[in-house]
Length: 517
RNA sequence: GGCCCGUUCGUAUAUCGGUUAGUACAAGCGGUUUUCAUCCGCUAAAGAGGGGUUCGACUCCCCUACGGGCUACCA
Image: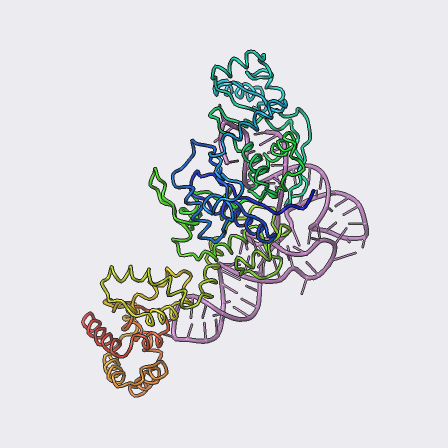
């Protein structure tokens, strides 16, 4: 085979939100294309009009864009030389190719009704045979192999519904080389005469996919393992069309499995087990049911890409954190694992935390600010300036996994507390406490500059003067200022809030606590 | 049921005939911290089972078991 420019495609059908397994498939396609300076194409396989879901196509495009998995050709990314990229818009081409197969004797018309097919399958099952439409059973069905030419012509001309089925050889070994699994072989007697062209005039996946991959000069088909059983069908189609010399290389990716228990990761798992299975939040247009997404759950897109890349692939080194560019460099099929991968939600969070720790304060402020203004509006608090928000991010950063954690970790920096952790008060507040805080407040009022080291000294001095151990009092200071028994660095928090606010809070806290004592 | 693919610590995985079977997440313990988290250190944890091939097998072959996928005029 001559050297061809690498061209791969991601070809989802718009039947609902794109699930992270699909995003991973897209990612591997993308990485492979970029690694080889090739093209990555987004093709929409909307040949099943019955399963079409409003908004799904837009969702797919938006998801890929959010992840940074950008196609350089195809729906949502600008047409290339092989437009259109939506199969419904290519409808007429498929008929032509289906007819070619019929004319060459590799496919045939079939007129069986759904009821007749059902009867045939029931009969075969009852007698212990596989319910297949194959080299044996097709002889007793209504098709252009059993009917005379005249009858067939009459039926077709009169507009009777028909499908076109692939005529499989009766007993032939079909072999293909999968880039991940090596040689895989099937016997045609185990396959059945798949419908290639439906009675509604649309092709099925099998036909459309082969025709389009050929026409779009696809060199590598990288798709989920669920396609492996139908791969021999595709090989046969390439052969019958006479395209074997340009048949793409196949790779069938291991599936994403549920974190625990059996089966592949499904739509339902996410919200049941507390992690998203979709890149973006999705609302079902009919049931209105909402499924959570990584974006809305506070994940960074680069973290999602990183964690997805590691589900079934590894770089062969111990490095785990990879940017998209680094992944492109490191990616190769040799390191794709063959077995299905159980999704690990804990590790997913860990990836995000790693990215969060690496972000600059500017980046964090940018993400946090809109979240913050939502909370501030609801609580009618005056907005703080950007240097204050920067300082908050800095204080809170190492304690968070998601930027969305920031508010819970820092709300007391924006809102003066009205309640005080009763457990701590019960444990630590004693007869010396009012004197201590009065004295501390007095000392803080005169403190300048109001900074960590100075504050630290004042606290220690006050303790010493009153004969109190620092340890007894630190957590109380925290509670009186923040209301909570734990939180960000105490001295940093005091410095940030400033002398005036701190003194007000101490006074307010003392009143409130002694009143409730 | 049939066909196809797979099987290393709980999970993701390294190893591509010779290793004390490594790493990360989770777990446990300890240190750091006023506290929680972070951070650091340590511990425990695996080749499904059985046959071969070989001087030697996690690695190659076969069988069994188990897991997954497919078996639509869905993709």
